[in-house]
Length: 234
Image (tube, rainbow, N blue to C red):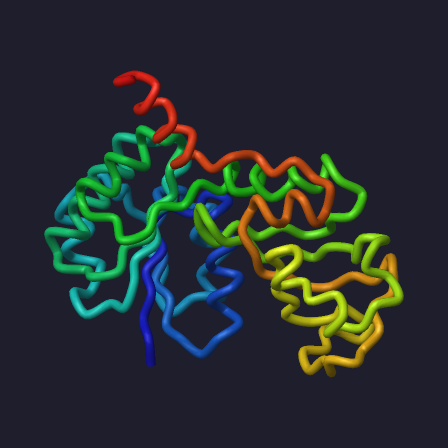
């Protein structure tokens, strides 16, 4: 059975606990707030009231063989950096750490975090495109050049079959599934007739999605920073 440790039970840590509790696994939690640990102790395998700033605490409570450690110490940035470093020294191979800022995230990566999470930033990335378009309903950036989104079929493709629309060639968009009241339908025949206003799940580049949905997709942080570097040295 897999084992996970959650160090710091701020919002992201509690959300991760809820998700992990959906599967069969062992969960260890550490937080310095007694009332929080008391409230969670029946939901986990082990719960400890301790301040993670102490290196000995991490080495004593977190098994070296644990499958992953999740670090969410709220706005205690210095402590999250220290704890991530302790976990790296302990030999934990999978460390997920929540960052409060880009600079904080870069430090976490340098000292050993396997994955850095920016909950507020990721939420903003998902919401901004939907605010800018009536035809975009869900937006999941996978990387700088790939997004998955729920989007309404544009009017010009209504009444066409999948084959006639040829969205991959004409719009750079790959349909993954059709959305229905009872869920997603993945198997779509080439002679299926698209309905204007119909919602589909697609995979494509941000640029293709912007044109297909009529929404302005904000440029990724990586591309913005890269552009700035080019301008700096041009």
